[in-house]
Image 1 (cartoon, rainbow, N blue to C red):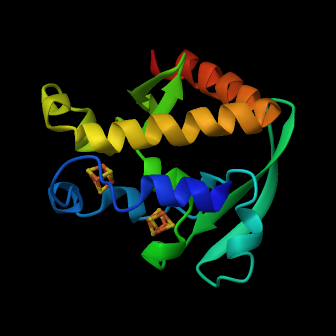
Image 2: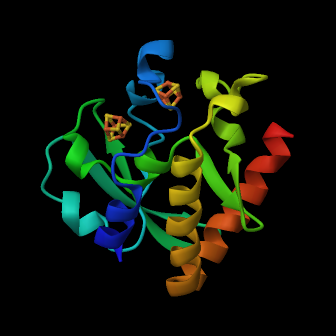
Length: 153
Ligand code: SF4
Ligand code: SF4
C-alpha cells in the first residue's frame, strides 16, 4: 500500500516549480517537536534512518506512529505526509491544510490557480485509497483534523 502511494505521488509537486524557493523550504526546518504523522506501513521503512526519531502517539483514540525529522532526508524515503503537504483530504476533497497556513505561502490568497492538478489528483487518489484500506486510521485522522479546526477556523 505505501509503495503504491509513493508511486502514485511519484514526483508530483504542488506547483509546477520548486515551491521551496518561495519560502526557503520552510516546511523542512523541523521544530524537533511536532513531526509528521506516518501512514500505516511507513514506520518500518524509516525506522533505522538517523534523520528521524519515531514515536507512537495517540491520535483521537488510534495509536499512530509519528516521525520527527532533523530537517534533512533522502527525498526518496521522505514520509507520505511530506509528499502530500500542504494538503489533506476532507469529505472526499483535497483541501489546503489549515495547519500549514502559518508557514506555507501556497495557502496565500490567489495561489490556488497555480496548483498543479496532477498533484491534487495524485493526493486525492492516494488518500482515498488509504480511506478504503485503513478506515480506522483514516477516521482517526479525520477526527484529528476536525479537532484542529477549532484552532484554525
Ligand atoms: S512550506 Fe509550502 S511552499 Fe514552502 S517548500 Fe513547503 S510546501 Fe513548498
Ligand atoms: S522528512 Fe524531509 S521532506 Fe519531510 S519535513 Fe523532514 S526534511 Fe522535509
